[in-house]
Image (tube, rainbow, N blue to C red):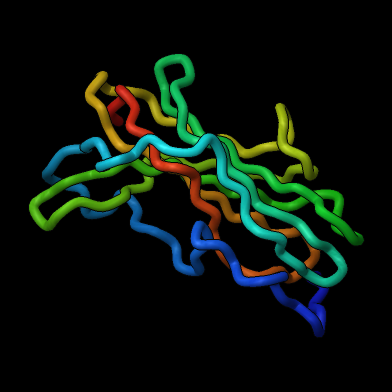
Length: 170
């Protein structure tokens, strides 16, 4: 049973990296190719602003897509900032590749991972999504994370990683 708080809110506005609706999935990617994302090599990791749910203040975090043993990988986790937070949260992370087809270019989810994790990140406290490289063509990659506190109703929204062009095509 989830706790519903009268004062459910986000401290400040969600940053530009957060959005309420999920991005495109792999359905409909029938003809075309994965491609590098224009100007897709920027910052090392993304963290949301403070998010408040009941008496818990926390943040969502996601690292940049990176090579990992013949795969492209991304991790998502949560950070307790203050207050009384549950011992775990469900962390869902998605890995997306930039795909160009006959109707244009856009992001396609190619892998995801989720689980219940304690706050803090680090090995064992983060969700992972990974996709094997089919070849070494340069493709644009990004990840996004959604954290849902266990037993507490919290605001919706995603936090996106930086976009990285990697020599790995899904």
